[in-house]
Amino acid sequence: MNCSLRRYIGTASFYRRALSIALPVMAQLLIMNLVSLIDNFMVAGLGDIKMSGVNIAGQINFVFMIFVNSICIAGGIFMSQFKGAQDSEGMRQTFKFKIISTGFFGILYALFCYAAPRFVFNLMVTVNADAGAILDQAQDYSRAVALSWVFMVFAQSIASSLREIEDVRPPLVFSTAAAFVNTFFNWVFIYGNLGAPRLEVVGAGIATCIARAVELLLFVIYLFVKRPPFVCSVVSVFKVRLNLFASIFRKTLVILYSEVFWAFSETFSVALYNTRGGAEVVSGMAAGFAIANLFFVCFSGIITSTGVIIGQELGANRLEESRRYKNWIITGSVVFGFMFTLLGFASILLIPFVFKNLTLEAQKIACYLVIIAACYLPLWALINSQYSVSRTGGDTKMGAVCDTVGNLLFVGGMVVLTFFTSLTPYVMYAIVKLSDIPKAAIAHFWLKKERWLINLADRNRQSN
Image (cartoon, rainbow, N blue to C red; front, side):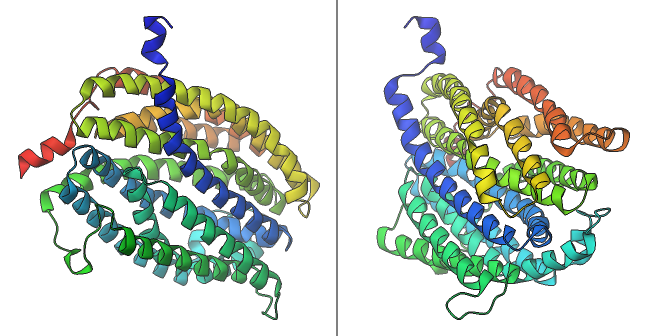
């Protein structure tokens, strides 16, 4: 291979390492998404209205999950670099930041879900023909699932920390176990099997609470037995290094702005899609996204492997290797995206089987949405790799700038298409997602400035 190609295409050993990190993460999310698909299948058996209600609650939950993920991403920037620098105290301080922050907001969100304010859910279906019935189901599900968010945030903090130190198998095993627990109790409580009452959407929420509790218990047992380097005693959780907390918190705010703006634009777009009809549009789009999530797992693999590999190189002050690995990861990510495009096309075969109880119109909407999303996968893989490289070196501003531009174009396009055209929701989706092209272009030129090429672990040691 000539030198110009070697600059962009890595060695086989490099990609084997990247895949050894990415594949367990992807497998974990794939299993979780398959179980989510089974959940949708079970709830879909109750009809369009009940599935739409769960989906509406899920859109609000999606925003909170983005929030928690932002905290973990910001902490992960430092965790990977401290691992590369062999700084155990830095890893412990980073873990404390995750636990304290996610725990606080998890409790607040659980209280919000239990209150289940109808006016918030109403924003998602303002002019939908079946709004009243859908909102009733959304409130019932939200209250039933409320407690699970407390369990989820702690499990997510532990799982992300394990992945960032390249201990990727335990999250896969424990989340898989929780997923099967969730599926079993869905079968029990949604339809009233084994003598249990038939609780329908409430049963789905209860099953989620049980599964999340099991998952957290497994993680806690693992920490006590294996004692990974970031583990701290319970009594020392609040003994924190304030300057490091402040640094991570500043990164969190920038990432949070970027991620929440994106989440808001996606949630806002769902509300506009839902104006194009009744429950068949809500359930059809929900079914399409449920299938699409099966191949969106490639993004998490890209993000995790990038953070671990480049983060450890930066923490060890191997800057030239970091520069070279950046190109290799971006090229590999695009190729990965094309592979998942083919899988995306094949996945539409699942729709008539999994969502057979939905109307034919809802199934058609789901099929078109999946095909369109699959076509965008190489572009989205590129953007995720660009964002990951930038954030791993502590440059969170790039993502904020790119998302501001892209999301303004996206939201503006959605408003124009909603009020000035009669296009179907999946055609609207295909058009407005072109707004991601400028994001990739801005990121390309931004990365050339190498603002991400920073050893944060060394800077933190010098500041103490």
